[in-house]
Image (tube, rainbow, N blue to C red; front, side, top):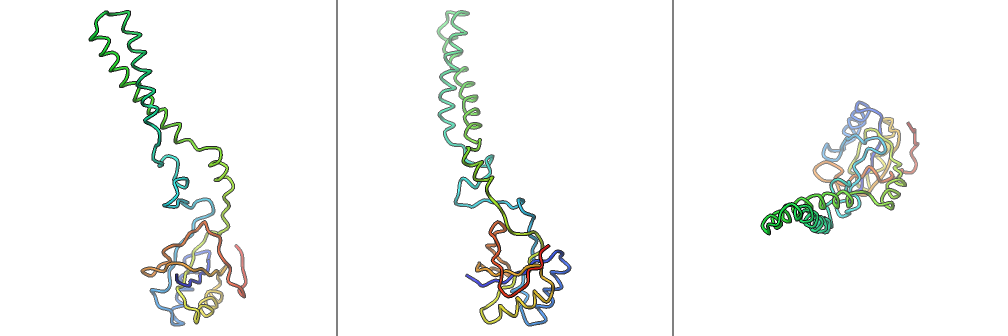
Length: 196
């Protein structure tokens, strides 16, 4: 894990000015990254290892086979019941049963898929209590060491950062690779929080 210090700004111009101040103080370009954080509630919140975090319409549909089987049986029975009084032919009855089973299986699978995709009461409650505490804005993230983290934080503060935070994360190819906007920021002590 890498040590990261970040400052939040209202505009890209202010963030770019802060980055220039960091470069003037000896920070390398590959250790400074600027990116926009969306307003609360507009973050794509999906963990790759959690089926419950995937949007409902993207979930793999489970148990549609059961709906298709029930639909196939019901479709075959209804088709034979409707066809039997009209014809005494065994071939016509078998054909009607096959067509009815096919149509019933399609309808049963679709109905079961729709029922499986609907969120449960627990899922609705889970999403309703999710609160994000991170404010939107432009973050200037700096990959630091224990020796220069105070210097980076002071440069961000001097540049007018609205808030300064610290984090442990993955820094890859000049970017904070595992930044999660839904996680609350950890304020870096000793620096004023300007709000807004």
